[in-house]
Image 1 (cartoon, helix red, strand yellow):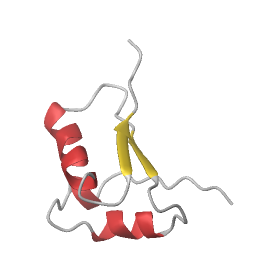
Image 2: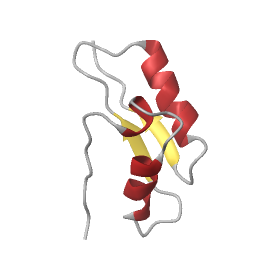
Image 3: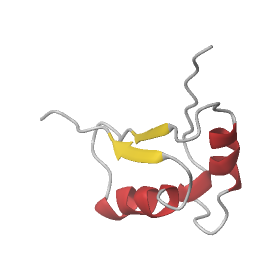
Length: 71
């Protein structure tokens, strides 16, 4: 069964030193190296927010990426 887990805050964005929520989400996947995609808001996100995403998820067993918005 495929699933999409979306969060609108918490995890790496609120507590970068506490990745419990992020680890829980990754634990729901049977894949040993799941893909995790950062989807920015329509108005764009600050660069440091995206950098925090990569900093957190590069320490976890996954493949982080980000959705590139079209202009």
